Image 1: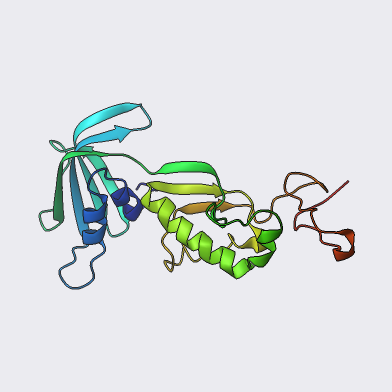
Image 2 (image 1 turned 135 degrees about the horizontal axis):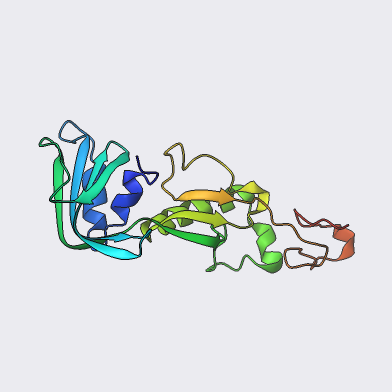
Length: 197
């Protein structure tokens, strides 16, 4: 069995992701449990080589077999998708993301005080979907106020997104990179995650 889910793998079929992910998730009686992808090429990241004429067998949410089309036995009742011009590869990993932030909003500095933790979680859900659609199936989210990146909505299937390794708030010394010391002293504001000693 392979660790990558079929959904993540389907999203990584270059040049055909929209069509395939849409077909694979269709509800109703016409949906097949087994799916066979026949790709022109497959990137083998363990050896660093590109393999030609490959079959990927997916049963439910699990990739059960990957191998040459000539030698891999497949079931006849499975749905088959031909990808004669596509290269398939495993999901990409981004080790430094800030999914709960929005670079298009001025949420840095004092303006960030106007953004609630629930709003940051919703921004994170949007960015998680965008990240998955950009072919990243695992991310490490570094720093999220209010633990807005900690939850199981993606694992529960409520929100589409990559596997997430999360930190919650970042640690910082007073006045350090993640501290926010722009308010006057009478406000006694200290950023979450600030610690000294």
